[in-house]
Length: 118
Image (cartoon, rainbow, N blue to C red; front, top):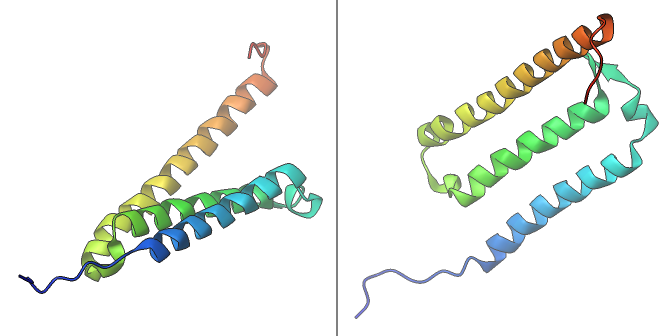
């Protein structure tokens, strides 16, 4: 009794996702260990290029995890946009907040008589 549905193995897709996420993570770890001078000491918009690369790779991994594990490739573009755009926006927004507040706190401790207790 067949209902017209065939079981389709997705083992190759799982290995593809594993390979892509592993490769990005390995690149992050290698860059974190080596910290190439041309990336670490070159600044762009107030941060080193190395930090920008880490942020870009993190946003890519978050996007790809949502894309692959929520099976977004088969959905309509409106649903894809409704899920992915807020994710990317919120990640960039929290990054902005953390960097802005961190810079402010650093300035407060650097330019005042308050001691660094941590």
